[in-house]
Image 1: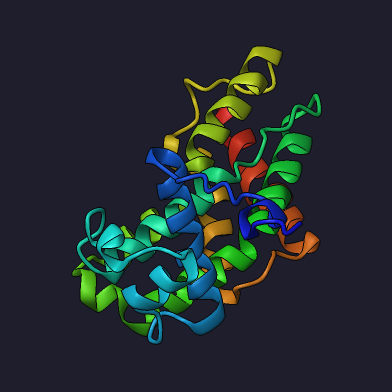
Image 2: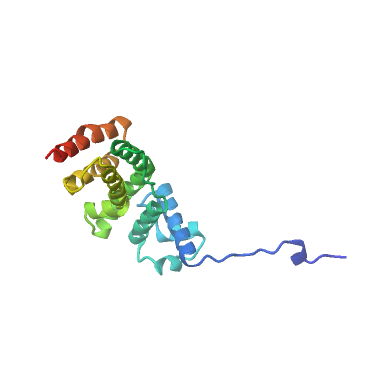
Amino acid sequence: MTTSTSEQSPKRIRHRRRGEQLEAALLEAALNELIDVGFSNLTMESVAARAHTGIAVLYRRWANKDELVLAAIQHSRLAHPVATPDTGTLRGDLLALLTAISEARATFTAVAASAAFSGLLIDTGLTPAQVRDKLLGDQSLWSNQILYRHAHDRGEIDLDRIPPAVLAMPFELMRHDLLMDLKPLQAARIKSIVDELFLPLVRSYQSG
């Protein structure tokens, strides 16, 4: 007695990706392609091949590879948020948060910067500041709001007396260093930002 081929082989069940699941898979494929071959060599065709889909699926969502790469970088950043610490002190919170963001964003920033310098800046028509904000995002903004609010509630600082530029300074310096060095900040650099620059300024404004 013979057994039919369909009985010999298990049935293949294909799960079609749709909606957010499909878009996430496409963006992950684009990011991996960017990491492997760089922005100059990345094409819509190569991303479609990596994602095992047709190129029309990409063009229905993004007009060109510039839009796709920006979306992929932003997706990766949002998919891996950094938790806001609560060490009990403003200094401890700042040291922990700057360290965590620096370590989490170093490789990501290197990839994003490589794309920017390889043509993304020119092709999109965006300014360096606009690209920076799109690539690195505003996580530090909401993170430091929570962090400073905790310090305010503990009585460590008075948010009404400290200019927003001072509060933003540690995070702006961190983002600058990440873009310049493309690697995590050294512990000594983070301590210098907090202990030698930020906290003296805060004490100056606190004392009036």
